[in-house]
Image 1: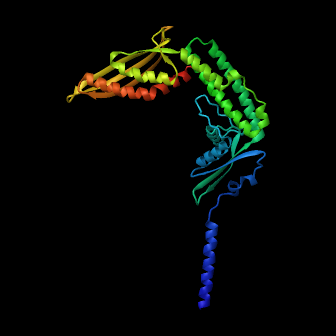
Image 2: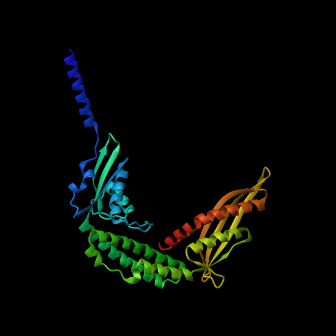
Image 3: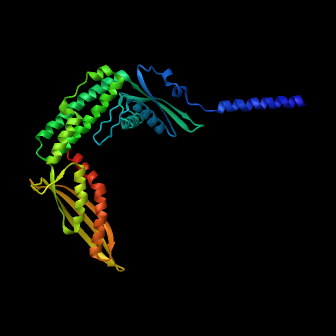
Length: 333
């Protein structure tokens, strides 16, 4: 009888550990040793994992991108160029995701969902030779675009538009620098054969933009109520390397401050609208208006106005520069 219990215990032990071994989850082999599945001379590889499939893909793209060691901030004009795969919503999402990691000609080749561990795995691959060809083509097209914007800037009399055109050319030139640095990792001989005209480099274009910014002078003419707003505007212009000048300024900041208020329970409640206008002094035209609205309280109208201006000063200090840059992008459209 004791012998039978020992046998039963032994069988249960074997079954328990066998089940445990089967239940233990491991990443797929291609995630552990991707080099066993892809020729490293032909492909660059990035493996990622995450709690969602999208996060795993993003980590795979990030791992691949880290090989190049370069980053670039995308802007509203950045191109989404990736692979020649057939179009589908899933592929389009992958293209967009890879674009955020500054990658071209990449694809997610394998994915795996470990349901027990609630973990997803993904592998991104890039064919080296094909990618070099694509990057070369993109650099060539970018140089044509840069040259076009520089030529437009040379012929543009409006300084703000000239400044915007050059800055757009700079953003494309920075893209080219990133693409070229990627080719260095993919094919150093090919990278050395690619040349950029000195006038179209990001460094040269930044110098040109600085010269234009230095000529783009402003005066600030605020009403007595809005006098406190002048300080934040000066700071924004300073950050953009543009000058304040009372000697024949090209542009002028003006304001319009409208209020509507009433006394309620001994306090003065005021709704306000501040409109800041940039005027071209050479043409007399209004170039751009920025509108700020809000509500404030005070002991009386004067006190409410003072409080409103304190709030507006903070808002303008935080928001005006980004809105100004958005405008510079918009005027190219």
